[in-house]
Amino acid sequence: MNQNLILRIVGVILCIEALCMIPSLLLSVFGGGPDQRAFLYALLICGGVGVLLSLIRADNTRLQTRDGFVCVALCWIVLSVFGALPYFFSGSCSFVDAIFETVSGLTTTGASIFASPASLPRGIQLWRALTQWMGGMGILVLMLALLPKLSEGSVNLMKAESPGPISTKLRPRTGETARILYRIYIALTVSEALLLRIAGLPLFDAITTALTTISTGGFSIRDASIAYYQSHLINWILIFFMFAASVNFTLLYLCATRRFHEALKSEELRVYSLVVVGSSAMIAADLILRTGRDIGSAIENAAFQVTTLISTTGYCTEDFDLWPQFCRCILVLVMFFGGCAGSTAGGVKVSRFVLLCKSLRRDLRRVMHSREVRPITLDGHRVTEETVSSVSVFFFAYIAILLLGTLVLTLDDIDFTAAFTASLTAISNVGPGLGAVGPTCNFGFLSGISKLTMSAIMLLGRLEIMPLLVLLMPSVWRRK
Image 1 (cartoon, rainbow, N blue to C red):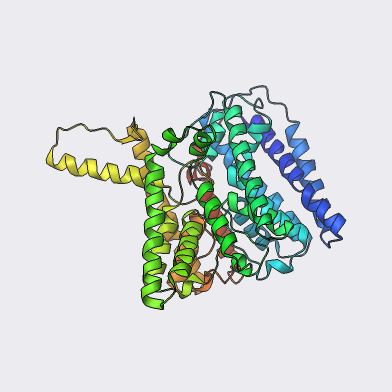
Image 2 (image 1 turned 30 degrees about the horizontal axis):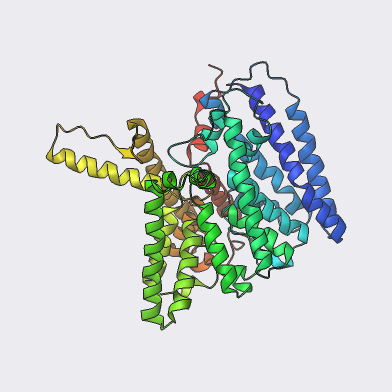
């Protein structure tokens, strides 16, 4: 394992995190916030350690696949620890709570321990939004966009950090791909912030909401989340951008280059759109029939909650925990589903479900026609058996971790619904669950053990399990 290069990359990542603290520090200084010293101390510690590690000399600048997975896992763990310092130094919460909030931000989960985000200092509010924006596209992807020549084999970093069973490159060089992805990411963020400002949101609200929407994070500076604004226009703007952010960024690139025909060929996009529209229609119909809502309100709220949960953003316009059982069941199912591969969304991912269904259909055909050889394809391209196998392994690990997390959370003596949906919302990086962890609640009541468990599950979900599990293998730490 190339330990020196890994430590050097960790140092560069810490330097980038320290730079990301500067806007919050400046906002605290010029706004006279009580968290000025907290950000100053955190920035100096994070930047100091980062500079020291980045000065480590690495004679071998080649990253193997194993090195890439270890590097990504270590970077996210270190980022979570140092990113928790502003919360802790400001006295906003304990260090365990700070770790939980930071991990929830970086993984774009949006589960919070704060009962009243509106009462937090402006610097902390901005830091919460920035952690989600940093983690949405991936902090290592940002590093590759800024420093593409830091190491050879950087494609292994993107492969370990990027979500989805199949990784795609927009350009032959990894650095070029990373820069294109971040251009799209920044363009979406700026566009949404401008539209929200035009729609009537205060400037700070518009910026923080855009940061947490495009990252599909869901942190809000308002206690009532998006319900605070009571605006139909804002709701529909958010629905559009949440859907866009949960679509494969490769398809957004095709649309940006006016290759709409190629984008519409995507099988994953068609299935994802069908699930969003179908789920919204079923929930809207149920709300109309069971609660007597008017059609406009039912369609808007159903579309918003389906989009925010399937994209794993986690905003809320009302307490959907009070909706009929059928509606809540659909919402839990879309939490499983998640967004598209290559997006900022969490969950299992649509492409994996498509591949699992095709694999099941092929095996059923083999029962009838044992000699038939039928490859599995996605968007007209043949999918390797290795990829199909990895999808099955991922799904098994996903369910196993979900159930194990539920078991640990029940030690806090909470009911099964709350424990299960809390574990689900953690591994799918959604945010709200049902019951005691519903959309109007927070996670501050959990014990320290449960918070650390959920933090680990959130990291497993964001990194799609394997990079963190690789750290537990003794053979990884051997030099040969």
